[in-house]
Length: 182
Image 1 (cartoon, one colour):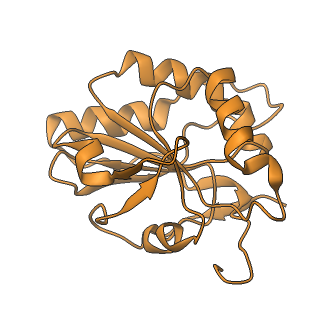
Image 2 (image 1 turned 90 degrees about the horizontal axis):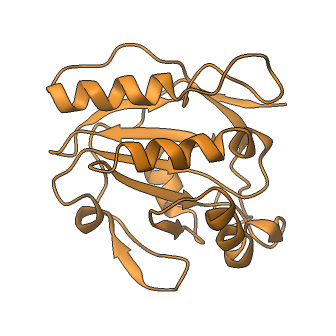
Image 3 (image 1 turned 180 degrees about the horizontal axis):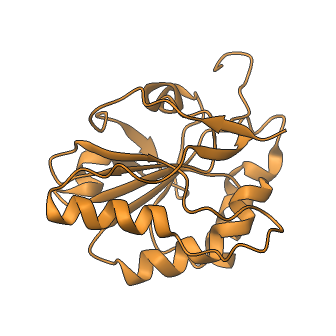
């Protein structure tokens, strides 16, 4: 059963640092560097992520002035396809040209209040949360086109310095918590 997230636990982007797929520790503040940013919790096995991953890559290339950051927080002992090798394959397959970070201790997912994949967060250049929710209204194997409409509208509001009140809660597979993380 899909998990739906309809709450926002944060008002600003937390000060975090995580390793990327190459093992290099990256700071969220440096990755965003005063730009509009999209941070989203992702993984390699969730059908909700697989459904939109190509469009996420396309939209990231289109909105190249936006800092995009994917984070995987899943327990890789239980879901080995979400370990580095699987995420590297996904990054190539989805044509993601942005950092993919590993939250192995799941602390960052807890700081964000993330509960599912995909779970999108759009931040203004001052790190204020503009939107937390779904990519668009499409769902796996539905007749609804994958457009990124909610995310695009939130980014446009961030660019204008206005509030975004549209969109929908995130919907997808629950974060796979380890015995220590969740």
